[in-house]
Length: 571
Image (tube, rainbow, N blue to C red):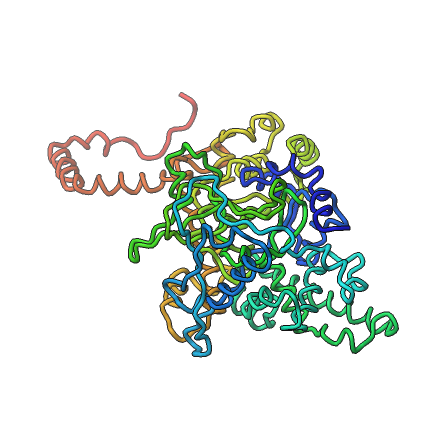
């Protein structure tokens, strides 16, 4: 079956769901399920062979820098030998600005001296203009892997990303003998990938982060997948000659899987992953929050200006398959001027932690960064059964429920869930609103916010370093890029938790009371008594002198002559 037919068939039933994968609906899908901790499990969940319409495609991110020479050679190969006529029409490949040696320029090493490529606009563009188009015949999909004479016998029932990794592993072993060599030269593994972390590096670099456990699972999952492949080869030497499959070493497979997880792009309209030459070398940036083009803040989310250098970067749309042109296209999201650096928007709306899992780096200017925070009901709650029924009716789970927490706003549904979990009487069950920010009662609000503040403090205390430590580390010249990038991840997570703590404090400030058995009491009552006593001190001498005058006049004589002790009886 041809690749064209396959991509068109995969498209069936998916076009209608493209809008459901938009940024504004992404979190609504994700809040109702836990993220898989395994890269293999993620690949399987999006595999065409096992799932016709994946509800949550995991789109790998950018991982490597491409040398200027290799990028220009690839563009020439696509344009002159592969009939990609649009290559070079809107895009210029030039030396990278800022760090000319790319994001691999490690201050602790002098080995990186290759000049890296940067992609800029060669002319002014308007929103919706196609700035790069790669015909589908130049893209690699699982179909290519299934038709590969050496790889095909190994990939039965394998996840799609593993299929692409095996294809890449075999083709890279051919080196210049591969017809894809101009493209393969631009696919280099990332030495900072979590797939290559040692146990010591996990403890040192990722302790306290939200992805510590998941990163370990990804590394272990990749090794288990390789061991399964080698076991299959060893069990049937007749089907898998050892000399033919000698290219499949652990290092080569991990390297290929790392590249695929970082460079493969999910094509919504075609319902498949694809390795897209040249387009996958354009850096991916964090997705902005959903903003209308008429909104005054729209431009600042899609255009980044560096005041020091005067350079501008523009966040374009995300790559997708265009049926009419039978090509993978990248479009501009907004008007941009010639010379602007090009970035691709991550259409899977991953946060910085997830981006780090994919390519060992973060987007320091991520405009829509967030973290998933879990919450659940207590089974010891007398109202547990009733609360569970209400939550299920609202589309939430009583266990393992997660919500996205943002840096710039308090998540309404998360706060409503916490309020609901703290309700102590049945009359308040239906007072909780999941569609608006509505306080149930002062006592409920106080308890909810205090628990949320305690959670924030626990998250901060899980790190071995504070924000000041991270800033100082970034200024040092004697640390590796791997350490520097992990520090940037920790700093991004801490900033988000810190902003959440500030938001909680702002909500706590107007609450003038603390919960007691008698209800809400003024938390400053003790302080007020102290201040009253202090204010009475200046009047003490005057009061003493007045009492002396009364004594001198004999005002207290009657009181002194009064019999001591209490009289008996009731009269």
